[in-house]
Amino acid sequence: MSHKFRTIWTTEDRFVEVIDQRQLPHNLITVKLQSYQEAEIAIKNMTVRGAPLIGATAAYGVYLAVREMLEKQLDASFLERAFEALRNSRPTAVNLFWALDKMRKALDESEDFLTTSWEEAGKIVEEDIETCRLIGVHGLPIIEEIAKRKKGEVVNILTHCNAGMLGCIEWGTITSPIYQAKEKGIKVHVWVDETRPRNQGSNLTAYELTRHGIDHTLVVDNTGGHLMQHGMVDMVIVGTDRTTRNGDVANKIGTYLKALAAKDNEIPFYVALPSTTLDMSIRDGLKEIPIEERDQNEVKYIQGKRSDGQIDSVLICPETTKASNYGFDVTPARLVTALITERGVCEANEAGIVSLFPEYK
Ligand code: MRU
Image (cartoon, rainbow, N blue to C red; front, top):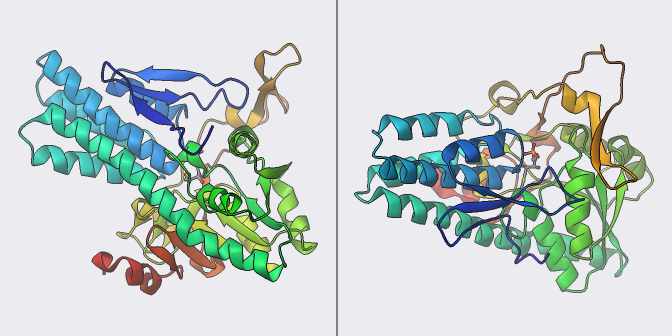
């Protein structure tokens, strides 16, 4: 897998294909999406996940709905139901709503729904690729600076969840500077948080880094603080599902604890994001970002590969124990060293964001 490998692509018969991320790292299986309902389910059950990829899948979901509506001569309420269903597929990543609004606007201005929805979804995909490449361009000097300070020694980077290419289309957000650093010959090593309950770190980030030949070590989620106290982390870099006007950052549950530990140990804590993950309509992340709550069985069971090669899931607590499963937490802006975006690096506050994105003034 190079960064040229994509996580979503179109087929010759103009449907959409994605990687079933629930099967990784053990099986690389692709799934064809042929209706908006299949796109909706793929987002809900996390066949696809990661803020930018959720947005791109929803955009193609709209295209699939338009296609079915025209082929079956259904009335416009079919398309409205598709928008509604896709909107309700996951609550936290704002890229979903951004992509649906963009598709809606394009359709409102169009007389050829099929071509417009196909092309607009394609543009969302292409833009994300370039955006993530640029996040790497702007994030690379941060890694270079640490490498220089350490006189060429290995730069140790800690990350949580998967904000790599698997959460995007190509490059990834946090992985783009890492891949570009490797291409420049900088020695990097990544501490990968396993990221319970769904283990996006061990299943996806470790897989992706392995495929890219990036040195990495898997750690359980509680290890980061210890590593930081012992000088084993030079920087933390995470992705985000929604970042507010004030610079508050929602990301995978557990991110906040890493930010606290980084602050206590004076380790820079960066958030890499495309501007499509900014939600400039809200300020207070703690009060205003909806936090997804998922099925308790994701906590009570753990999935892995058995010695006979079969993927299985096993119960890890008494059957009757209840579990709570908050998908995300909010890291207050005061704990964020800087945001790395496609237009450059800025402080995690309104002034910083507006300095790079004056259109959001
Ligand atoms: O529940 P997930 O796997 O969709 O959560 C993903 C994350 O929290 C990522 O860090 C975030 O979406 C950024 S992806 C570039």
